[in-house]
Image 1 (spheres, rainbow, N blue to C red):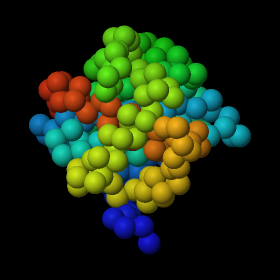
Image 2: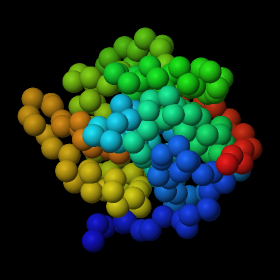
Image 3: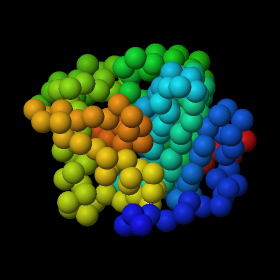
Length: 212
């Protein structure tokens, strides 16, 4: 057994059903009034042969893992799912990896006029550009991994998701500050969450919006 893992809440606990869009939603914490959340996603192509699009929801106050979203969905549909999920979690800060398929996510969120959106202002000693989405690269990925490792060691990282825990066990340091995350979709989304934690606290939470 993976240490700390526990089953998600029963289906229907969250006021949201994304199954029709090809997603699988698992929740461990319901949205609470007055709490701020962040939703960060790693979009994929959406083909049956491609890796999964994945998103992680975290509570900004204590960084507890609230929910996980994954599925073989197109970038546009994934963007719509992020907006729906963000709306349920008190109009959470929403962001995504903007590389490759990120344009489809951005286009859908723009069409839906969703706000607030994560903007990249740099990480560690790297400068940001103020654009929407996170530009994952070989230069900033080590900083992301380092942030999460520090949180884990300090007891400031919480998750009950057995799949996410399992993927972290598969994360390998390839040397020269390189990490193989191409097939670790949940890990990629969770790393992005940590990059957005400070920004998530800047936006006051709103009342959860029931969405079906």
